[in-house]
Structure formats: structure tokens, C-alpha cells
Image 1 (cartoon, one colour):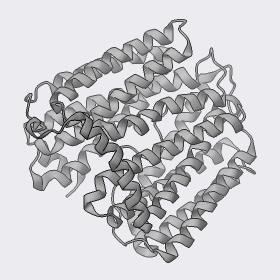
Image 2 (cartoon, one colour):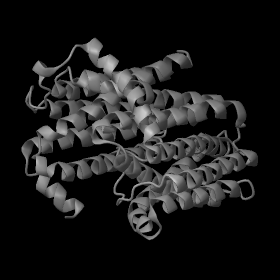
Image 3 (cartoon, helix red, strand yellow):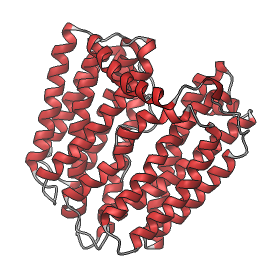
Length: 440
């Protein structure tokens, strides 16, 4: 059944419509919020953006996903999920206005980072709450359909927020004016969620375990996941390849932001740099979308192993070519190709991990996967702060990134020859969003 047909089927359920609408309003606001962050952190006329600033901004963006994410489920199983959806966005509406006030005041940059970090941390509870609530508004035989439709729709809403937010910053002439709109959308999402029954979305509070036991279980579970992945070598090799790729990807993203901000465009006119960066992320987004179309057929021809190796090799060639041809048109073309191949690798790795691990370990392993996935980017940000020049135009940086991709391809080719991955049919990415981080 088509996407539109699936959505029409699900939309017959009143409570699904309410949860779905709350998601769309929230992720639309997320897009507006992150456009404002991009302007504040990277493209403010008052700031000369450096690698240190970009690294700090991405650390603030991704730390909630690395640190808060694994523990969000513990609290979601102790709080009424409907209340989480209502209060999380009500709190975020206030926090977004706090961010706007701090950004407009002479407060130290550290205060702004803390305010943004708290706001993004609340978002981890909200997204996890949406996933946990979904089985309570659809029938079990509709759950696969709902899991395919809702994240896709949320991503479209987020993308709409990014695009419209950028246009609004150009029309209004100030990035901070978009933040009140995000606050209004968060409040609207909160109001829609409040239409659901107080206890309708669970959990069964009578079955909850003590918080201390639950927190210990999370830490022990991450350790058990690492041990299970070590034993299931195909999954471990796939995660190693993904972690290496994510680190290399992080270095190149930070370098390209600086390139667009300080080299390809006049630093005195940051709006030009923001427009160019928006084009780069749009090209990358088209690559992500194309990956969902071509990866299933590609893996049927060459297998999951072959598709991962080819994709990593193409990534290596594209980034290495930037050492020779570092021009705006080629960066746009390269963004599309890297988006296509990197997202293709991610789809394959998700599939390998799903097939290679025991079902009893699946939740813990994917929590472990999320920590690796985001921590690799944070680590890349830290290294980039030390080695990437402020203009982002050092060819050796892209050559190094290309070498990392090549090492990942060679390493995975050798390891997977001895421990071949299980074969399956890759589908849509497991998590919401794409490989590329939201613009922070």
C-alpha cells in the first residue's frame, strides 16, 4: 500500500490523528528552532565563526542524544506518557523563549549553550514518548504501517520547518524572530496532546520497578549490548564501520560549514553563507532520499556486504577529490553523493544489526548503537576544533576524511569476508531523521 493510502487508513482513528498532529506540530517547531540555532551559532554578523565554536555547538546538539537518550526510557516507564507529551512541549515553548532572551542579551555564550542543551535534552523525552505511545492508538496489525508513516511524516515536517524558517529569517531580517513562532507551535502540539486521555498512552504504573534498579539496568544493559555485539561479529563489524564513517562524516560537515561561512562567501555577509549551506544540506537531503530508493535494488545485485564496501569507497573518492577540486558546484555534487552513499551504508548497517543479534538484546543493542553513533560525531567535533582551519579550505582535511572512509571500506571488506553479514532486504532507516545531523 502507498504512503498516502497507509496514512488514510490510520487517519480514520481519532486518537492516532491527535498523536500524529502533535508530532507534526512539534517537528515543524524543531525545524524553526534549529534554523535559528544555525544563524545564532554560525552565521551571526557579530561573530567570526571558528572551528572551536562549530565544535562546541555540535557537542551541545548531540550530547543529549548520547547521554540523555539511553536513560529517557527509564523515566518514560515511570511517568504517564500523555503527560510527558503535554509537559515536554509546554516546557520547550518556555525554554525557546529563554534561548531568544539569552541570545539577545549580553549574557556569556556559555549561558546560551546551557539553555540550548536543556531544550534539546527535553526533546529526547518527547521523541521517545511518541514512539512508546504509538501502540496505544493503533491496532497491533497496523503498527508496522504506523512506524513507517509517522517518522517519514515527522521528517517532512522538520524539513518544512527548516525551509520555511530559512525563508522567514530572510524576510524578517532577524533569526530571533523565528523563535516565538517555534514556541507557539510547541504550545499547539502540547494542546493537541492534552486531548488524549490522561492514562491512555500508558505505562502500566503498577508494573514499574524502582528507579534505582531501572537506572542500574540501563548501565548494565549497555555493557551487555557491547558484549553481545562482540560475540555477534557481523553486527560488531557493521557498527565499527558505521562509527568510523560517522567520525569521518563529522569532520567533513564541520569543515564544510566553515568553508561556506568564511571562504566561499564574504564573512561580512553571513546570510550568503547561510544560503549556501542550506543548498549543501538540501543536496545532501536529496541524497538521503535517493538512498532509500536505490539501496534495496543495489543490495539485491551485490549484497549488503558489497553495497557497504562500494558506498564507503565512493565516499573516500568524493572527499579525497575535494583536495583537488574545492569549488562550490563540486561541494554541492559531493554533498549529494555522500548523502546517497552514507545513508545507504546506514540502512545496511541497521539491517545487519537487526538480523545478527538476538531479539532479547535488540533494545539494548540499539541503545548502544545510538551512543556510538552520536559520540563519534562529538569526538569528530573535538578533533576538528584542533585541526580544521577557520576558513575550512585546507585540502588535507578532506584528504584525511577520504583516507578514513577508505580504511573503513578495507577494514569492513576484510572482516566481513571471514564473518559475512546475514542477508536481508534493507528498508527504511530505523531511527527518525537521517545520517546528517540537524543544523545546529
